[in-house]
Image (cartoon, rainbow, N blue to C red; front, side, top):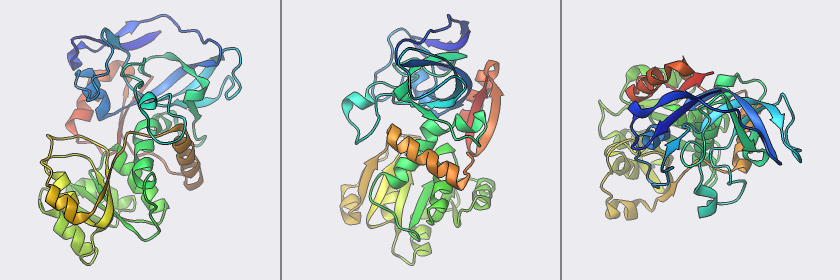
Length: 337
């Protein structure tokens, strides 16, 4: 079978396609023929050897943690899935339910476990979720990372009631999922971007307001004006340069900031601004299988389709990486096998 592989000392130029043996499922495992894999900023960080946990394989990695495929073989004692079902692997296979814990978080696909960047892969049946039937393979491949992260960022903390205002930074995969989930939940959405064209795409998907942060660097002032000076109830913080300080200024008293990315250099933290905001800050790293399945129910009910930016063949992986790095896309960049 074909498999992507990257080896130490790491770097995107070390990525290649190799021939690999077909894996066989053991007891409680299934073999999945992968149909598509979505790229995430996380994958770039890992392949460049920069992952914050430093928990990389010491030899080589089968990259990518976000994909969709079809069950083509099952091992003994498998009860949750059967041959022919379409499934999505969990990015953190050990996190079935409950709050984060070190043992749930330490192993991740495409990091220190073989990822989904290959034709066939074996997973524990407990580490799989049934794909929503109405989605295409390319769309379902976007759920495990961006989808679950957006769901957890919005609904994993203090409850948001219909009519609450959320501010979503950027128009990447997580932000676009969050936009769709927020509108389905009856929330008011403010989007930020450096591109008026991208903001128009967001408005077409239901965003109530757009702020161009390139034209308005102090975008928190506009956000507060849009809420009659009260401030927004939740900020989806992507970790861009200087963005956290603006998030603290935009948030209402005792509001929530869900930190889901590290897209720029570390921002200096003003403890005074943090104390003045009384904000609750949550670091979000995807979520549990329980969250994933709840999200899939909502996706099915509301017929939410992931926003796809670009789709490439597996052999064009370098072009896909370049597209992700360019940030010119809206939504997800996906490899189709």
